[in-house]
Length: 394
Image (cartoon, rainbow, N blue to C red; front, side):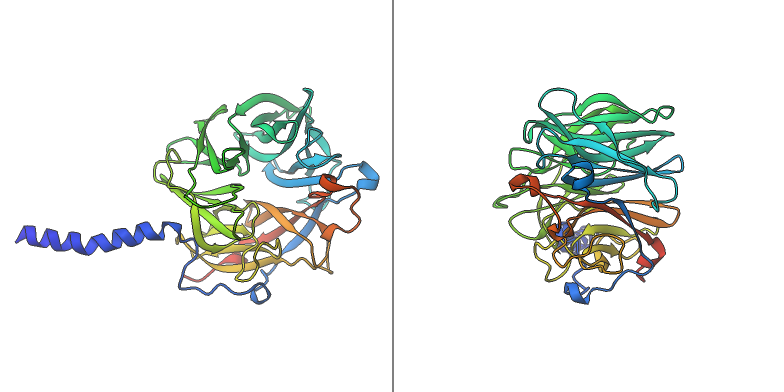
């Protein structure tokens, strides 16, 4: 009799296990309707700031991309890749500025690293505020995107200068998401590996030693075509979900690890439309997962509007999308144009508000240059959203 009951239980549970496995690629709750871009609700209570406008005539910089934000010792920091030449060429610099009034005003832009070695470019990265010290990790390369690696920097609190700590991740890794602590005591940093299909990848620390990271490249499912796997991660116990950019189709790729990011299912297409741009993801203090990019039923590869998709508290699948801002934004501040690309978001939560940095192409208006010089000639902007305005009823 006991054997019969056990067999019946196994037969009943098997379909559930299979369903769970099938759902590992489902980022969107199939019970919810994903509206078209024009039908998405605008998030309430958002404020906007300009961190660094496009000012080629004033400072000679063309390329700006990859805004990162950090609150550290009461100061708001912003960084980005900056280049007087074309995107991802060896004249690229990692640069930053600060705000002491929550982003209303910003300091002059200063340089973290311009690549002191001949032929080296240093670009955008991510911050990490830990135990009263501020770290920054930046993608770097030789020539034009050759020998990509990630370098670390530590802020000298007395001088305001950044100390070079050298290369901390090699093998083509470019850090794109701020480190998140895992229950095993290590930190995980999302990014991608340049070369070999450009898959999503993560770097895992040796606990709090941020000079040592293990590179883990996430395998690609078959027949994905072109991939530029810039990625973000959501950490939940030993389970880590990686959400990455595709290229062949405007759809998020997803991979799952059940062992703190050491091994992964292959990146495969999810059921969530997402433009072909770097995503930002995480978990809010409300227990809601979030994904910031451009997500709608009809958006395709268009990088607008800038949206945030959220789950219900405690759930793993996203079920509501809000517009952060549209491409046209005449009330300002910030550039407004029908063809403005709003992309490469980052986000940090601080005192009940979500601070979201992003690039704004301004529709290319007023940009100066030729060919590669015109790639990602952006302004750096920021939206500030009360977290309570993102609540979705269970």
